[in-house]
Length: 235
Image (cartoon, rainbow, N blue to C red; front, side, top):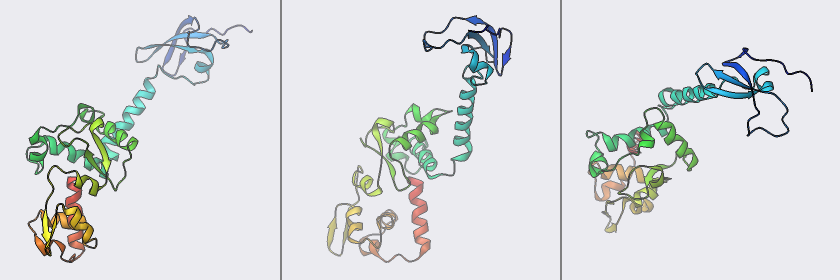
């Protein structure tokens, strides 16, 4: 084995070598490299193998990676994702529970429904919500739903589901009678009139239409676009 090069006092990226030190217990027992105690620019100390220092494999105590991840998360939250559907869902979820001027507040925040601290964290709230969503089957055809309709918005009580599944689970479903037939939910009505569609029927109902007005032909793209805009505001 050759003479060990003295690295004491040398600087490698953010790491200043203080002194040679013993091999850490976590190192492979067959690793015959020398190890050095270093101090990082941020003030933390770290034991690093010679090769990792001299070949640039270890550049800091780990703070560089932390900074990169935080920067990426901040960019995602503040810039890259604000125009995406999932961010609108996240924002509307918070508004329903926290903004007394929101038209849906009475059915959410007004009933004591809250958003968990994990999803409200100032720095990582949206990222936490985004990561949970990706790990739990999110796609652009689904909406967020609570398993317990009286429970809060939190990972253990939420799931991504289809619009129809969510509508069937609502605390109070809207009933209608059309052409002499009684429907317990607007979903059931939409299944008999698929060309009209659930979104159109639901939107018409909550704007005051009843009976056969609910199933009139869709007039034009203007109505369709309005329905989609209003629907996305809620979901």
